[in-house]
Image (tube, rainbow, N blue to C red; front, side):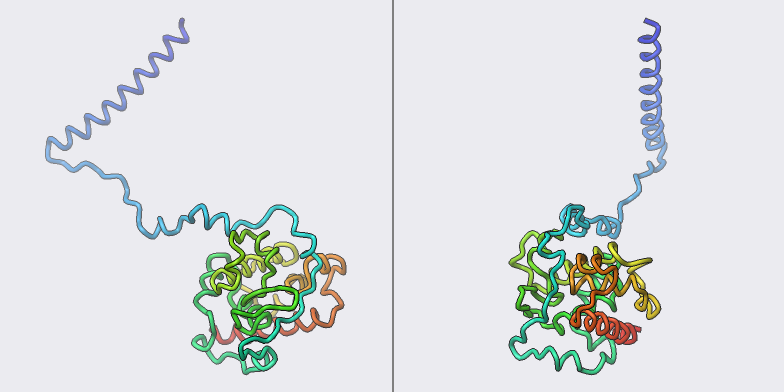
Length: 246
């Protein structure tokens, strides 16, 4: 009975406090005062809150990667519709930001996912030479040459949209971030020439080409000619884009 009485007293005190607060506000209004409004929620703060769909798409997978992708070494894409991979790769470095294709899309994903913009652009140039319709003999698709199985594992709900530049860059960047988490060291958001020379960085880049399984197998850049050339060129393109973005 004492406990019940004590609880009742507490409830009555809380109710009285709430009523007092309400009467204070009413009294203030009656005297011509202003009732304080709750703090406004800014439009920018609402935009900063990701939707459930966005949160899901940016979440790094927790389950194992499909086994067929874990050790897959991806061959270069087939040239299509007048795009010459070799000619574009050998083209001069971009002179400035205005000359970089898909810069706005890449910048958006760089900011959203915390991945260095110059690295995203370097991978796109090496993977597809900015050809959004590129497709490799093993089935890698689009600007960042995503395999449909990998894209689906990374959270792409509709892989029929894999060639869409915005979607391809989003999930290609997400895959880069995943591989950095597996092999890289430090922040991926702001790389430098010194960072690119690190073994851990070279391993993360190599994994995009040769699969994380092969990188783990050798605990280094795998001794494949294609992969060694891949790491070398991505590193060189990174420096080109870093200079152009200044």
